Length: 169
Image 1: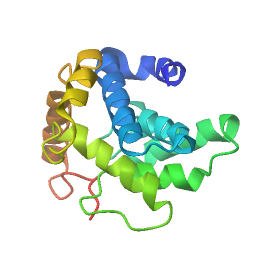
Image 2: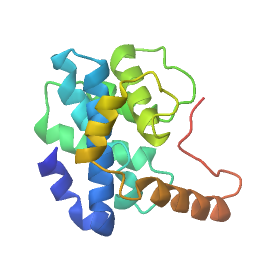
Image 3: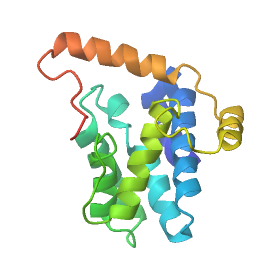
């Protein structure tokens, strides 16, 4: 994960640590919920790439650019993981309702993991608070949520008919 994130450092610039910490919190949420080690590399890939299109394409409508980035990476580096699964994880990570399709375990786990971090763990308050404190000690927010809010407001002013293009029902 670190090597891939380093590759994207020139795109992330001053947001590098904010995004890196978000990536690691989401990943750790996934492995906390799904103990199946066979899925952990899938979560790592989805975590690194799920929002990367914000920076690579300078857009808040970032799902497609994020998917394009992960597909380019996977073509050369991960022939044993099904690209469709990772694409579904990224495309549905802001789905408001539970996901019930193919690759249901990994897609739904990833969706929940990102929502947990996005909502400061309020939507999933039954999770172990001690684990959350540990994650935040090593991977603090550093203003990540403020950054997203600023981007969302800016986008909604430019595109009032599509203020949150990444949301899915």
